Image (cartoon, rainbow, N blue to C red; front, side, top):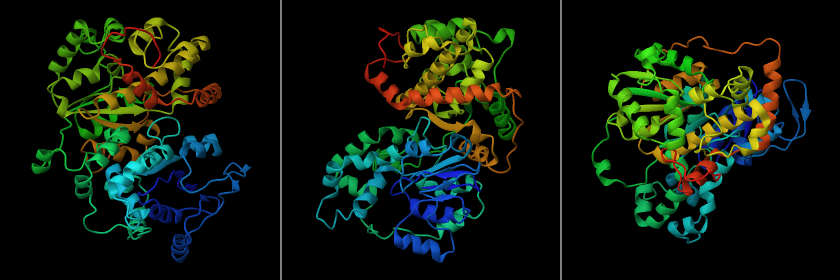
Length: 502
């Protein structure tokens, strides 16, 4: 693990992903106050030979604000544990980075790293005996929630993903290293070969790693055979929508897409004739969240989707709360559509709602957000009801986080989702990465902030701190909540039969 103060970057180190080489390269950018955890003696020697800083400050820390701590940071420390040791302002303002790898490939690397082959343990038996190894990385770097990293560098696309960080020289230094290599034989150990011999092992990986497989688009080795024989055409981005809670930069996103992709990019169609055809009415929002995809809601989506002309983008956050994903899944434009899941720091997001009194008037909740009185929800609102507007805001934000997870779990293999966080997207590196996932190459144009809340009194800062404390106490896991909701047999597009919490 590294906390690099000059880059304002925190590296959360997962296993069998090239993390040690990345650490060595990243340490070259650290100053004498940065935190660097120890690695093996041989790897420390490599780092020293290159003249890079070695292990330092992992037991005693002097933070940039002058404060000091005696926290114990260590190699592969889970993000949740690290977050509790790092000052809140640093955790919130620094970019948290980790590396992720196809689990079908990673477990093979782990098999040879543990020398299970030399011990005479067949690969399939190894996977059956040690299934916990498949979930170690998600415990170190959760995919969702307050401890989740901001950036997941994909092991299979490290050059482009590291370049998107915008750190000059990092890729060159990383690519010249080969820490912890040479344990895996060069032939006969590819996923297609090994899993063809051990199909039961592939079943275990597919089950244990289902969430990350959906999130990153990994596929089971060798399946489907027909798809492997015919090169798949790149998915078109003729239509782009946002799945968001609002107050997350959706107006800014519309400008970013329009300026850089040079397409018709709409924030919210607010013309008089748009309500009921392009913009959902209050009745559509209330019906969907009470009855699901009933005839009226389906009619709205038919009118809207049939009227769109490609290329087209819309960042209207109300759409994702009244059937956008369900409508796209059954539409003719599904394979031409990308949905951007746009997030923001949850405490700041909730403070914005409360400061604007967004939950004071019930009609605002019905038109723009969600209401605790709806029959169909994933997060039980009961424990938030006594907290007034703050409770409404926090429940709504967590409900939306659970809905993002629900849609990824339910529709992740049908619809292309791209995740973005506002704090990252507004930077040149973050915007470049987001636009690259939409097929854009070349120079980018960053718009000015839109609809930003301005407050010089410090009230919002105090409110944000209070809400952050509340969120930390809740310790919410959106993936677990969504998975439990699905397991209970409930769906957002169907009428709830009961109000039991998921």
